[in-house]
Length: 154
Image (cartoon, rainbow, N blue to C red; front, side):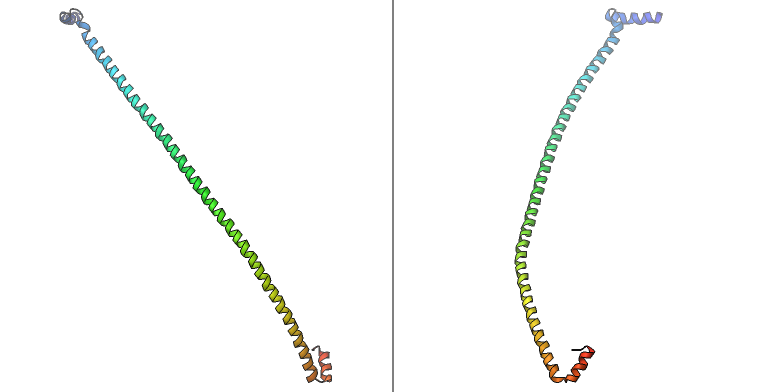
């Protein structure tokens, strides 16, 4: 305790009795200033983060609009492409129908010619058969004709 009194007595003459707590007061003052500095730093950093978050939100919103615009543009281009393809297919179908009708008329005309050709062929074959019959009757004797008929040949 004697040592303690001597420390108190040494400090006492410097500040008139308050010198004992000067170190503690200075320490508390320094700590308070550091706390305030840290609070200001936190507030400043917090504000910076808030501004940065707001900028990121704006950027995100802008990107969302850009993506939506790009998607809409792509959709419209695709719809236009499909519409053009459908129109082209419809035109080709119409063309095929038109060509088909003219082809049908041409086919019908060809069929009519074939029928006429077959009719002429039938008439000519009938004439050939008649001529062959006359030739056979002139060249083959009646007795040979009977033998041929018995065998099944005309």
